[in-house]
Image (cartoon, rainbow, N blue to C red; front, side):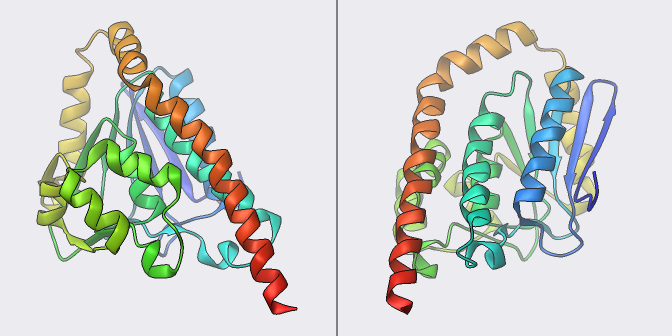
Length: 241
C-alpha cells in the first residue's frame, strides 16, 4: 500500500497493528482501509491482535480537514470509521488495545471496541468531544461509550464533552489497567500470551453471543449517523448560499 500509515507484523500468533502517520494519527479513509486490511490479514493468520498508536498518541480521531470539506470522502470516512467498531467487536480472536497516550473522539470509539484496553500513565487526555465541537453525539459513538463506561461517566462524556486524565479515565471505564510507557507493549504481549491459552472456538462463540445485539445496533446506527451527517452538511451548504 502506498502512503503506509498502518503497520502490520505477526509473530507467534500475535499480530501487532500500529497506526502511525507521524503526527496525531488522524483517521482518514486511507487509514481506515489499511486498518480493515490489517484486520483481515490478522484473521487469516488466526492471530490475537494488539492495536496501538505512536509515541504519545493513540489517535486524535477523524481527519478534521476531510470531515469539514463537505465532500463525499467525509461521509465515506464516517461510514468506514463507525463500521470499524463492529468489525473489531466481532473479530474472532482477542483484541488488545495498547493506548500510547491521547485518545479523542473516533480514536476513543475504536479503542473501546477492543476486548482489553491498556492505557499509558502520563499527562494525557481522553475525550469524546463532539458536543464541544458543535456536533450531536453520533448514535454509534454513544453505543460504544455506554458499552464500556460507568453510567455517571457516560453522562459527562456524552453531554458535557469532559476531558479525562488517564487515572480518572481508568475509573470511568476507558481502560482496564494503566502502565508506564516503557511497559506498554511488553504488558500487551503478556496479556496476548495469556489469552492464547483460551479455547478460541469458545471465545468466538461467546463473543458473538454476548455482543450480537450490540453489534447489530451499531451496524444500524452507522447508517443513521451517515445519513444525518449528509443532511447536516446539506443544511450548512444551503446557509452559505
